[in-house]
Image (cartoon, one colour):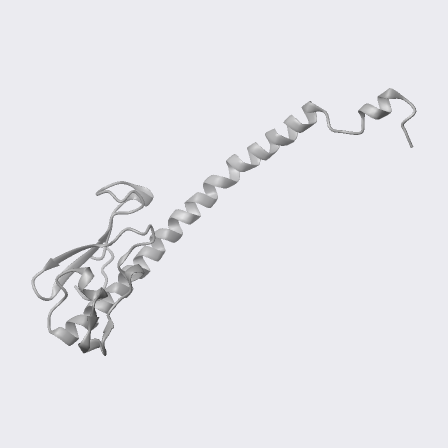
Length: 143
């Protein structure tokens, strides 16, 4: 059935102004929601990095017990080792932080070490999610 008046035919769709108002509302909601979601994502990555760091410290401690020294590099943990029943001590994702950057491994002596994540930007220093995370700063066991 065809509309009787031309005015009725024009009301069958949305006007440009109505569409622009809806887009503006969606944009306003996005500007309010997205920063909060991004902050939560940053917090989650920081927490995940601290957990991965703690787990890696346990792996290094196990390696130290088997070899009576800490590994020279984190790559040593990825090699098959007869003292670990022929298996590697860690997988590649174990030696990487939540941003998929390899931890910095600062070895001092045969028993002391520090693990450092360079944060979201992968560069030294920074603030917020870009700040470095150190195993010493977190007072983690094994130091």
